[in-house]
Length: 263
Image (cartoon, rainbow, N blue to C red; front, side, top):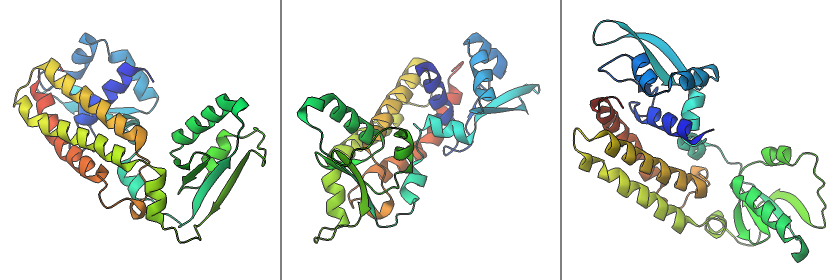
């Protein structure tokens, strides 16, 4: 998806009350006139056909009928970066770890690096350089590798539980860098606290810059946080704190967006 479209969806997300059923509408004029002036009408129609947006007729302040566009459930998930934190944290865990062990020679360094990138993309944690773990079933990973030859002498998939006195907390902190993850969430929280400094009627460029910075920081958190089931999260984990503040900031941001002419 193009960067401009991703930014648009994120702005739509921020106009929602408590991040539910977001609406993007300039109350001083019709939606169509706003979209036409900004060259977005065709793009929004395309997103609606893709079921990322939905629209309905709604009375405007001047009594005329206007089109109100909202994110669908699929569109909201895309705007959030492809992951719903609440669903991620609340998912069940069966108590079993999925493991991938591999031993690729130095002559296959490129393949080894590709494998590690693939595992990070699947949110596996690196317990040791050649031992990666995940609390989730590996069906998606198997589908991604469908048709590829897996040589048990170089790579093996396993699942089970530690049996040498290790606990799940040690597994988690050993596989994922939660110090880095919490630092990134701290940067997001610090930025969210700056919302008050924008005042009640910020300029359009300043508000859009604030939203874009927030989006960058949020995506930075998503890139490193495996969003483990809550039973596995460290006690000092900052993700929930950041998410709660993000939710609280949403209603305030909506009012600021509506106060900015021609956003």
